[in-house]
Amino acid sequence: MKITLKNIVYTGVLLSFISCGKDHLEVYPTETLSQEQVTEAATVNPDVAKATLFGIYENLYRLGSGGTDSQEDFGITTQYIQLDMMSADMAHLGKSYSRQVSISELTAMVDPDSDYNYRPWRFLYRIINLSNLVIDGAGGNDVVPETESGKHTIGQAKALRGYAYYFLTHIFVNDISDLSKPVLPLYTSAEQLDQPKATVQEVFDFVIDDLTAAETLLEGFVRSEKIEVNQDVVRGLLANTYGALNNWSKTEEYAKKVIDAGYPIMTADEVALLPGEDGSVGGFNNINVMPSVMWGIDITPSQELASLFSWWGFMDFYSYSYAAVGNPKGIDVSLHANFRSDDIRLNQFNSNLYPTGKFYYQGAQLNDFESFSGPQVNIDSDSHYMRVAEFYLLHAEAAAENGNDAAARASLKALLDLRLDDTSYIDALSGVALAEEAALQARLELWGEGKSYFIMKRRRETRTRGANWLDFAGESFSHSDERLTYEIPQNEILFNSNLTDQN
Image 1: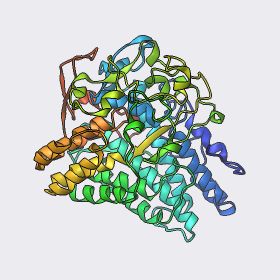
Image 2: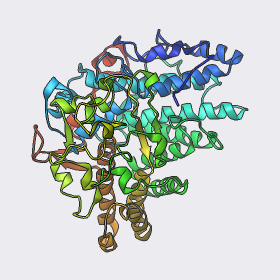
Image 3: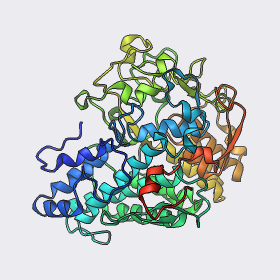
Image 4: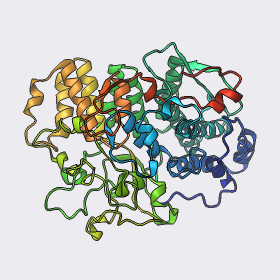
């Protein structure tokens, strides 16, 4: 189902997401509604807050979400691609059309004037700004709406704001374990002007406050579409946030809550194009037939998305894509070597290590899996942001860190029993070795899904690029390396008088 905003007077709020002007973070962007406007309008029509909320959701996948007209500016999955490359797990295997070249060459992240730094800053602070408008319109951070509908609207806004700060703290902070370091402006209301840097600890505390409040406010919320954040998604975000802080007991607790929600793990034929299969099942292209997906966007032709303005146009060899014409990405060869010989996920990759058996557009099998055969416009292949496998693996990692080896093995085997013929090797692992195996399996299971960078930061890892990289093959990079973290955009430092330096 396409998200619609019918009968909402103030849908002009969506224009805020496609402005190409490179102004610094605005409290009242000229293209959006002010807090007073939202409050006044919401008094007359409560659907105004919902319209603003759905505008935030549309920001997650629309062209121009980061404030530019670049083909590499299409919301959250833009960042998934770039972060997977920065983590060393996604190798850049061709440089035609210059797409993501400066990410692979590690030059963009040290240039504060680069749009690669500007776009995620703009994208995520837009989510924060619009979330603040919704929350301010209801009376502020401490107000609990009286109606269930009001609670659910504010719960989603707080969840999205918390998620944006969680994301920012990872990608703009070199070392997330340095909790006393001032790093990011913290805006808790749309009325606040240019803010100084808050510390890593202060930002994470705010994230946890937002997500914990959202968990309560979203009690009983039944969403109509998977793009909407529900209580299970919030609990997944809390598990990840506590994991980033290495608070393993809370990580284990919240990952278990997600598991207990009952989402099924994807089956073998859902995650890989197996020998003899026709491809009608799998491809990660239709979230409506993927019950394991907890959060994602159902793309329909009526949304008029062009392939080259989407994740598919950069990652899928079969789509009308850069991947098909000389700018492919593939799994790092050293990471690929960690698949066991009986792992069905080996079928996700071809001999060049392109993910041709994992990701393919909806209907690729009808075109005999020909490269570059997908539609140029009005695509209908979906994007997912969260699936339950992540939390089986995170629960295993956290439980092992907590010394709860039996629970860790059970969660790890729950997934690997669907991927391997023999999982008995897990029985010999315990403690840190078991936790590291769970984290490794997360990198393998969730490859190309935007999770590896966060695993690297969570475990404070050093990664080494494999031999199939075009740049820096064989070289190692710490999780805190300046080249693996975005710079604060130069315009933000120039126009925010309370910011004077980079992180």
